[in-house]
Length: 139
Ligand code: HEC
Image (cartoon, rainbow, N blue to C red; front, side, top):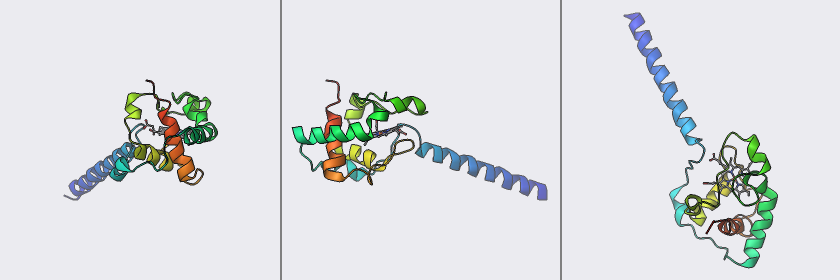
């Protein structure tokens, strides 16, 4: 009787561990982002203009190009050292994200992608980068 109970406890503990590890790794699965719903409709306060795109391009060169590559294809020098894809900003799939969703991704980061909310300001920073990323779409 005692051994049955111990076995039962061991099995349920094992299942609990497997469950928690699989949900943990799911939260970190490359390419899958948990973006809070409100960002879908968050408006970009910075108008698309020559100036904001140029500001975004500058910042991109400083903070993003090393991984994401000159044209955002995910082929920067550092990309080869990572075990996950840096995505591809030229694709329809990426460009279908809203400005707010991309802003969230840049601000918070995930896994190997750093968060930029501390190092890059909002308006003439992360939102301007969003405007620049739109110019990388393949038409
Ligand atoms: C150290 C390398 C590195 C740097 C630097 C970096 N990123 Fe990333 N980025 C990644 C990786 C890796 C991913 C994919 C993360 C994942 O899915 O787990 C990613 C994902 C993204 C995504 C989501 C793409 C998608 O398809 O949903 C955006 C947007 C992004 N990065 C923008 C930027 C911007 C803008 C900068 C600069 C301010 C930047 N990243 C700097 C590595 C980097």
